[in-house]
Length: 57
Image (cartoon, rainbow, N blue to C red; front, side, top):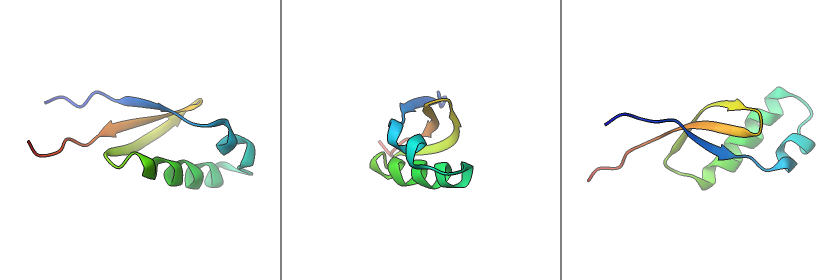
């Protein structure tokens, strides 16, 4: 099965609160814990571009 990248809209507070790119990365990873089957590949604008892990069927 092909993995199609998924986009997750990130809340504005992440970018408002972060002081630098390292903090953005930390806050995005912390926020994405709410999405346990998603692995962040990159941040593009206000979206986290993610690869979705497929569970065993």
